[in-house]
Image (cartoon, rainbow, N blue to C red; front, side, top):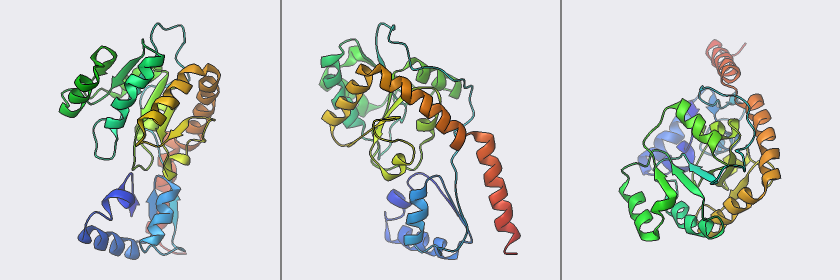
Length: 258
């Protein structure tokens, strides 16, 4: 069985049938593959037999990548990117409410929102908060374009209340963009608070704004984090290596006990 993202935190407990079939599937599964250690722990709570084989492995999607320093402070306007789009577990309402608080300290800041073009909720928040001048709603973009956006941005924001290991988080970290993310168990497997990113209560706009302001102010924090994250992604999420390990794991499982 392979579980990803919110399978065991959001979807599994959603209905009686989902709870039943999640538990049944994990009880009969011969192996469990997840993108975070949290889901191995949760899988055992849902009925997966502890001695059976497990693998934790995530790999960022392949796109042009090179090691880069954090976005230059020489740029006229600091840039903050939200690449999570519109999902029920992404608190974009909190993100938009944090923007005026950031603008009070950084009036030239620009906020890029990927996969939100035409989103009525986003448009309503922008109008209500009078932040149209500072926000750009983009459609879905290619992986190459997304990588370029990450490289142009000082900070990326992931205001999530459910998550496994988001691809966009790994991609932004790989591109040298400083992560500010919801404080979740799975995200703590990648981000150490105050070292290679900042973790916040994703339901609190003041806390989110404070973290963005701190990241914009502390150039050294961003610089150190960029180096740490480049090394972390290379070691734990390089696509070819991850897929090779996944392939070997599946081969061992299919071969059965020896």
